[in-house]
Image 1 (cartoon, one colour):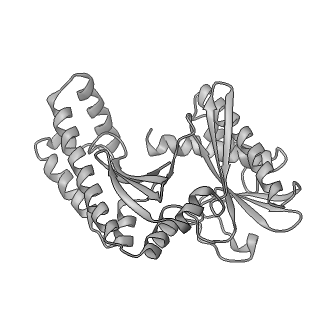
Image 2 (cartoon, rainbow, N blue to C red; image 1 turned 45 degrees about the vertical axis):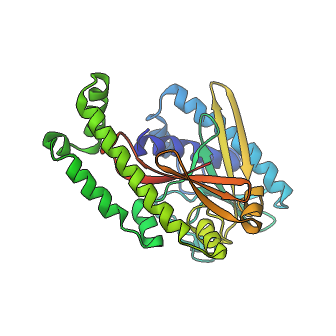
Image 3 (cartoon, rainbow, N blue to C red; image 1 turned 90 degrees about the horizontal axis):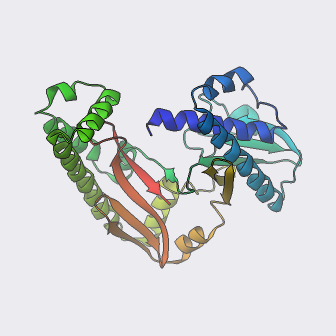
Length: 308
């Protein structure tokens, strides 16, 4: 799916979670008209799946929140993923909206706030983090964004009309070439694969040059796992399933087996496949870092994903 596809699906899922948590009322500054504008962009099946998963996700969230002592009486619900959301008048402190991992913020009558980081997927396996190439470059002192651009310019020299297209049209053209078994698809696909592998190798070398276990831990927690002691706290809830059969799994980013392993075991990085790095803490597999084009090779931007 394109970024736009993911956004429209996620928005419906998140807003409906907030709607249910808010006593079947749309949350602060979100109107029914806003929701309906997003709803009509989905097919009937897509809409039903997002609603079904949201219902399962809210049940799991309520259960976990109650176990943590928040109670069940909710005072207010906010959709924090809305552009421009201001935390200061709500929680009393300034919170960086871009870095806050949760999509929904719940205020309880007993006091205190708890966020909900909502993930919706068919299978239950979802990329939990998608940092930009430039973000990782800045964190680690790499310059792979410039390399990717240069490699793309070189690869497309023989295809000027393709290079001049928008990303959406490039993806459409690559799909047509693939279906027609045009040699151009194979050539660009192979060159794109080499770019992904090169970026993976550079990141792998950089990570293994971090010799301090403490520094490895700090980097993974702050840049990939969104598990710093940031305020407000939050829970990750992943909803899955389709066609009437839905499930949800919850995780506390600061209290789970992966975090226990990360804090007590030796952290290692191992190459996996052609474009991934397996991150482990002792025998516990934490996640995979993966470089990939967001669509067909050279048809979308290069990005990284943290895959469960």
